[in-house]
Image 1: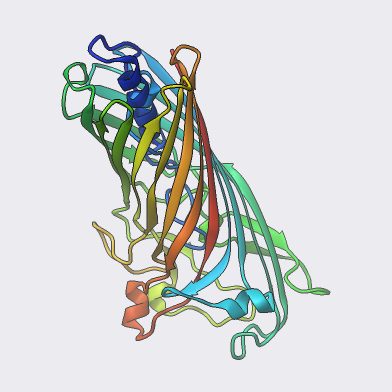
Image 2: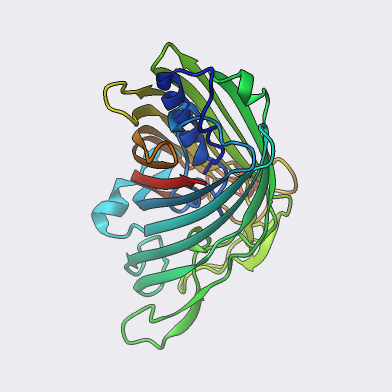
Length: 384
């Protein structure tokens, strides 16, 4: 989720350039990290991304002004992959895990100077994880039929970031680069349990939900981000945005407890890993001169979890991997450039569940991960 959008008025800009700058920065508005961040399905799903640069939103946010952003992300992950190969039999046999994520982010930006701004992000998540696994579906596991149905909700991990434009916005209305650096606090829960009946006729048990739907990652993080745009002609713009969450701690200390009937994990996977996460977006934006305030965007989005972290150890259970998706969208600027609505529908092109460091230590590829076909994103921003 990104945030620095653009000065309301820029004397050196034509209307078309101003409008495009707004749409682009609007896209930037969605980029900085949101709570837990960025990938898909069993891997992770906790960030609303952005598209574009700053010109389509009415200009850079002015010094002393505020911007409120409300963002939404929805995804339904159900296709299992080992490497880049889909495990079609899981879906056909009804043994696939089904993750549903609904993530809401609230963000507030204050423009301290024309170049520097501060941003706070507060995520709230509603998630579920369901699976019906017959006995002996995976060799001799599980020992009995499992009917798993988890439902969680709660506050995510709150982050505070500082952001800076490389060049002075007043003299660079057609291109710029912004960098962000912050701190993410472990305000979300990472070990929520459900009171479940795992198999018909058996007593209910307290079972910790899978980490992919927990509202927090359980450790402190360092979110970094970049956002860049270059205007081409009067109505077009290219953008390249990205985010990366650094997690210095190796694990969050939560036991990696398998469902009943499955063997205990290897020592390397005994705890849940505190894994880094990333997001990158590359695309173009086009502002419709004849339709005031309307901009279309089209690009590629890659998000995922690496096998190795930038800082700290790599043991603990994680499902590393990534997805690449087409990302078409629209942005609509109204109320004199103070309000902006965006919507994106992403379609996955490629998904890959790569082996983790413990997987490679144990001499195998490791398990699979569930990915989504579609990703739905929407946002509303208001400047005052």
